[in-house]
Length: 111
Image 1: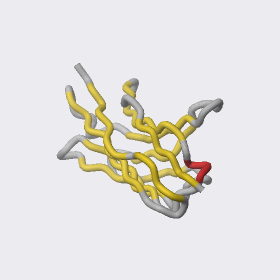
Image 2: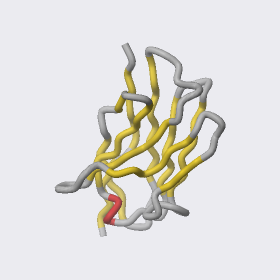
Image 3: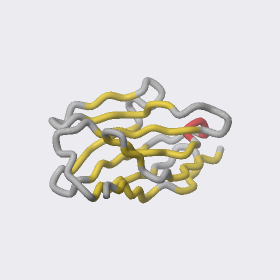
Image 4: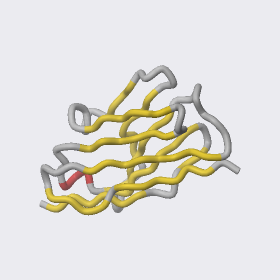
């Protein structure tokens, strides 16, 4: 059974930093692109960042230069480092790989 278990997140003031991690168990996704998405209240889920198996990254314009996605294939884990956070980054963040999603983690940025 594949599971994506997220950790991290929480509450931070604007300008602060938070990190998220997503550990995958049940099978290896070493050759798959892994990603992060988020959903703010009343809005649709949106793309945040992806990272390919070889380490190529792609970011939403809204987070480019502030967020960094990385992965550790040996640990089957993907990370999201979030710096210079803004109130508009407040959302539930989800990791994803293939058809699988994490449970979601709340990130709240106060102004």
